[in-house]
Length: 244
Image (cartoon, rainbow, N blue to C red; front, side, top):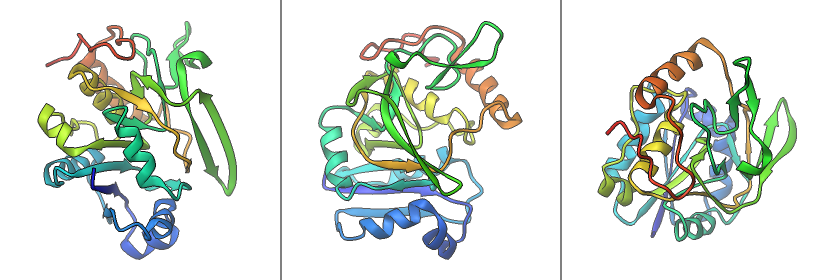
């Protein structure tokens, strides 16, 4: 890994992104490191999978990709080193995830309760520490020990070597505009034998998720049609339920 390419998309125009977006502030702070490349699509109206797939295809063999939301504030000055170290242990690195997802699980943090409502997973199967910055207030969510191999990772922050994805012919499914693109990607990776895991990187996220909206439910139906309700593999095992 010689370069780290930060890949993101935002609806904001370039100046507004730089001045107001959490990731825009992060990029200014990290600009001291010449090994990092910035690839942010502004005025975006396409799904994240489309943006990420272009970066996978166009990035050099010596590049790692940091696929990150525009509402993420990176507080780690040594981001390049953290990602490089994480990718020496895992093929795909995130800041939070689930070690042992259940069958039909709709988010990495939640399962369906007996009444059909979303219920937080037991603490023992989660991994990661993520700060939250909402309404100007900061909080810290401790999910579980880090680093840890996982079956699913939070899509707000994913790092991976572009060459690895190309060799495995893994791309994001562009039928998912936003919701469930990350769970689908994680399952595609585990189906191909890649190892997913959490790594200690200090970030704040400007969102806690947006569940049960019409857009979320539409994504859930697409995801279920593709993967069904079969059990997910434990961390480190191949996903035998891959639709491919």
